[in-house]
Amino acid sequence: MIAISPLQPADRARWQELFEGYNTFYERTLPAETYDEKWEAFQRNETIHALCARDETGVVGITHFFKHPSTSGPDVCYLQDLFTAPEARGRGVGGALIEAVTEWAKQRDCARVYWHTSERNETARRLYDKVAEKTPFVNYRIVL
Image (cartoon, rainbow, N blue to C red):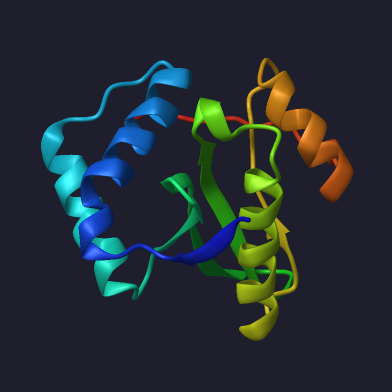
């Protein structure tokens, strides 16, 4: 059974292991201080938030998200990161995390939950295609 909950102080090492796996998938490396900074922010639970999925073995998935204003209507929720341990994939972990973030956003009167993923993330996109609408928007960025 999958249970969703906030991250606890004892989850620190496992959270970092999963977040490092997420960043490796997206071919980026974060400095150690970034992990420390974000962990502290998630523990404060003020502007950015985190949830984890647990099974009988421990933490098997994480998600990071935040609420922000929208110029065209009510606030929205951006689901920034979602990662499931490879050994737990296909067991409903990702779907349970998305559902929990969606419920969190509903409770805070957000108009929608949205996220981005890589075109090459075929495994995750199979889930996303079931639980959300794929929009026609193209993502651009300027790295500073």
